[in-house]
Length: 142
Image 1: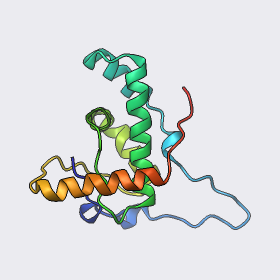
Image 2 (image 1 turned 45 degrees about the horizontal axis):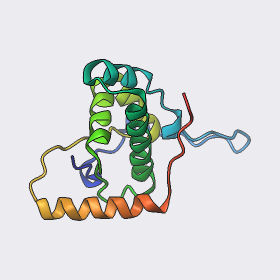
Image 3 (image 1 turned 60 degrees about the vertical axis):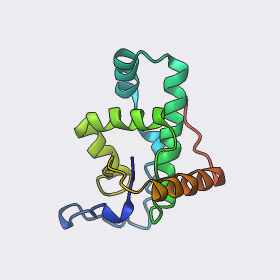
Image 4 (image 1 turned 45 degrees about the vertical axis):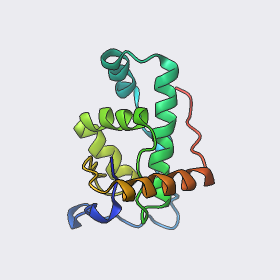
């Protein structure tokens, strides 16, 4: 369940970012821009979740991705099992997940489910929850 930024690989030189021309404004990609339609459909079918539970998990996942964007130097962990399941289903669509990660972060966001130090994990959850209270992601309806 750990999402450790220190273990993330950075973007290779073959996908280096280009600085836009000063005349052109470039909209930054955000979690709200991701189309989770297939994730929602898969979770409903395979997990049997209702739309309200799926929407809540999606909002938490959006918050989670936003926290990683804002606080990438911190260990951000899923604070809820439904959030983690939503993340897993996003990962299972490997091509889309890779594209979404590249658009959001400029690199692939790895998921490390091997938590070996329970005390460290509890501290990371506490830090994540504290950072989460600083600002929420508002998800577009859809």
